[in-house]
Length: 464
Image 1 (cartoon, helix red, strand yellow):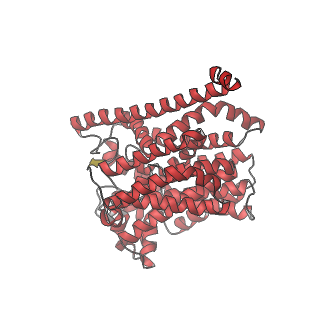
Image 2: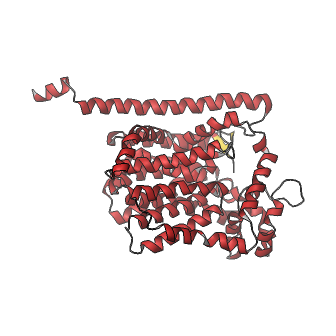
Image 3: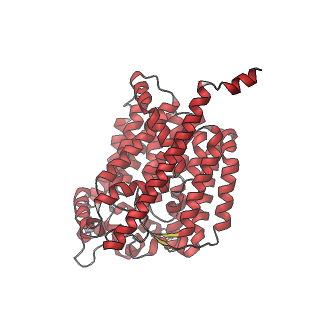
């Protein structure tokens, strides 16, 4: 009789749960509509005047249905994570979670990349005319190359840098120069470096989540960090490496601020060091400062700040002493940006189509999670003010800080197209929002993540 009464008269919690799930699906549907609109409008604009400079808007991609050596492996990894990821993440030993998540992420990224084969999928990606490996032989004298680096940014003078070299501070190119110097030259080693380093961002994010939220939410987020559609681009670009450096900077500050590590001052110093390096890998990643600030706000402390600032001075000081001027480089980059496609791509389209790219890269589960984060934001802010916030509130504020940094990048006008690749360092911190989704729906949302990644990798040829 009691069971019948509960069935006939659902509780308020049951009603709220059903409403929440419907709203999650509505948010996902809105994400699909955004992507559809970006495709339809983008194709119309591109057909009319070719001003988007992408073949399959909003992604920098070409229509190319195909399968490859990695197809069975990618399907198998996806199926395994969907079926066993949530319960395994909940039960696995604490020490084993990080290496297991890294290994799973590595398997997912490698299998997706291998859909295009070893050459086109990994070994040749960083050897094209736009990429860093094209200029290795111009860095025989590293000091001279850094001193004259800014003189080759603009289009026009003889010997101007390829697009990616000109578009980033020299720390990015110098990474591949140093790999070449230690005997790991060529596209294969460069591709493997970016994939292995890039996937380490997953354990870095889990460390930060443990410190800032709690173990339970970190475990809930783990499968979503692994099986993210953004893995399609993690396996194809140096931005994956940039993502990892930035992620470890955030993670080290998180453990320093919460004093959950033996040497918090050393961790804070290392965080600053990596943030300084991040700024010399990509100009736009100075916005990672928003996440670092969020860590200090969430932990309600400025104790690590002097050590972070001290560490953050090391890399800039080294490059400045070597003759490279970051501010001048950025000024010239802006000029170069408007010399090329960036000056022709319409801001009115890309300011919202960029978000469609992010929807594809982050996946529909992340969209639904962000819907829950937005709904919980007012309460999370109030809890932060009073110091009574719980783990979920801190997770909400961390993901919204990442969203804020991404929106600033979007509004700047310096990220028109290619954001599925460029914004990986911000997208990483949106993914944990999926931990807010109900337990019973996790496998379904993980399946949605996998489907997006597999469709993208099998239907189009992604650029860079």
